[in-house]
Image (cartoon, rainbow, N blue to C red; front, side, top):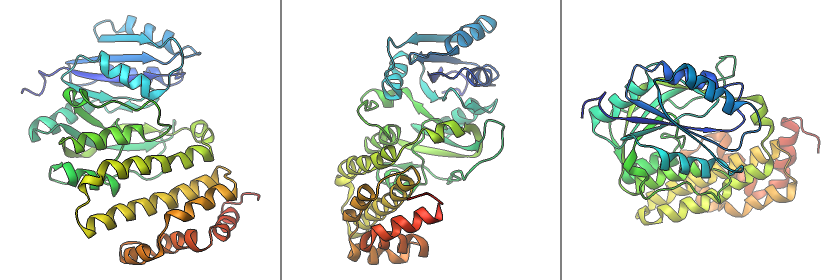
Length: 329
């Protein structure tokens, strides 16, 4: 397949993004890869997002596009399913409406999948504020090899392959039997990618950042402890999905390690967003001391003793973290 011959669908879920959608679209319009279509589904925006999109495509009427609208606010999973349904490309990329691409992002991603003959390609990304200031840590996983099936799944569990859709490119056929679960409050994208690997998809990697992931203070303040705790629901689904892959003691320890690290992150984030002590204390039931001590060589000092504290005294850890975060009890 010639790199420039395949049609790439760039899927944009749109919802109240009037401040950012034009920059996102401009990053599409300046792509060095020419054979693209833009597919937008508006999730019942109440601001001027749709008007900005329509104005942009009047100015750039050469760009192939499809624009549709939900008749009510349906949420991101419903909207992504609709986006995939409308996509005509051989390959699919996702672009969040407040993020943007480097000008050669699609060419770079296409080169990854075509040169390696894989189903998915992943590049690195920038994490930044709306002003372009670098913020937080980013995933730097770019091995010079192809991962598939069990290897790819465990790489996800170990936070090497991310669960983000937007710095990847996918063969369109991967979505024939995979859909975003509209009942899940979090990690629906993560589970879609994991299911693809369980279905036999393979992935190759690039070592350059080509996507700009923009973090907003406003989006952070919308988080709640309930959303943090909802991640525990994802854990149960994950364990059910990968159960057939767990065939050795080493496999068991890898999934337990993943569960305990997620439990720790949920515990910490739930406290940050105001969870009452009785709800975070429930996480205690997930920790088995014997298993934890078997994992000790694989955990750093802070993680090991923090997880241990969840098990032996979650209330003490709760109030200790409130003091650290300067949160009033």
